[in-house]
Length: 200
Image (cartoon, rainbow, N blue to C red):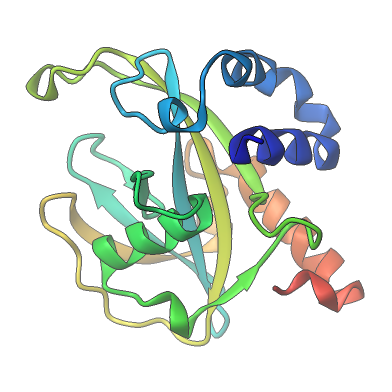
């Protein structure tokens, strides 16, 4: 059974309003195996994974300034063959890009019955990169939510990013593409206060 098909179908059950957004992804999953769905040379589209890390003390989100895309984004990237699953990939990417070990984080899952289902899936087009000989393609970014007690200094990977910031959640809402994501985080937080078992 495909891990990624389980994830997408489970995510759709929790996000009925987004079902159409992921129909093309499911078509691709029916035609390709999991390894092809994380292959960065699959220029139809492939899965990536990212980590949203929020400080409990100041309610700020960690973001890094991406060297190629020239904008602030949450840490994340491609899923490697050696990653056991996309959640582990998100943790690995976070460590590689910021030096933050997932051991000091609290993971908040969106679905207690399957901790691999992310709180959000972003389908977005990646522009052509002639330097890497990569055509324009889609990323299906599986986004996972974590909390850290206090903001910490970050050791960025200069190959990936030029700087980092802990940005107030209200300000993140004003950033392109993040308004609905922050609403989802707030909704999940409200639900977790009523159902404590959402913390994995």
